[in-house]
Length: 307
Image 1 (tube, one colour):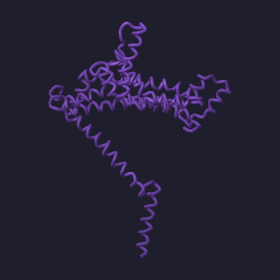
Image 2: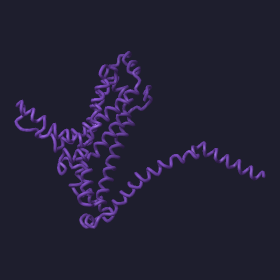
Image 3: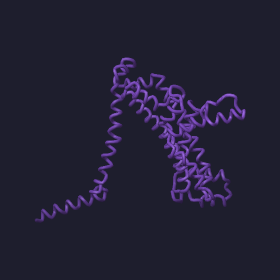
Image 4: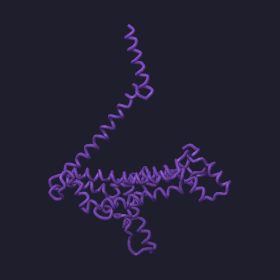
């Protein structure tokens, strides 16, 4: 009898120790999320990586390299490898422009004034358009026969239509239109978490606006700027509809997503498409690591506000 009671006490003690470490029946609630992650992310990701080591006979014959033939092909084929720099040349400037342009706008709209809600709505409205509708709007407005060119021709400002779409400029404008609202909303939310009394105190001590921004706002805003840049960069780096609809799919907007689609949909080379997709992830991770490293060099502390 005493042995039974001792066993019950031992079991209860074990459950208590596990509960202190967060291990209890409540963990079963995580099961659906774990199954979803396995089915929708981990398994497809692992399967895609596995495909990269199964090159087709044509790739092996042309580039060699055995199971690494797809990677050898990626780095050796200029038409494919140059898409890395083409994508970076689009994504980095677009993300940087969106973040830098959103900072002063978010600062201006931080206070309360008449018409703020209406102006904010106008700034975030492009989110509802989507990339396809944005591309269509650019073609109608900025195309060779678009409203802008016809207006400039009629007033005699130009002699021939400007080439603003079906090239780098068209894709860049599309990325700005679709990415700026996200940057603006994110930076506005981070700014709202910075206690205004910090700036007021610095002002009373004689600090100028530039000093307040450089020594107070920027260090506190750095984590938000890093996160905003990362999300905007990833959004721009994976550009596909814009590069196809308002860009040059075989020229200066031959981005990596188009190369992956070309391998998948046109060449029916699934292993090569997976290789390009994996390399897209690697490049993104490198940029994200560099941004997070920059963020770590600045002060990160409590904002003293809602953030």
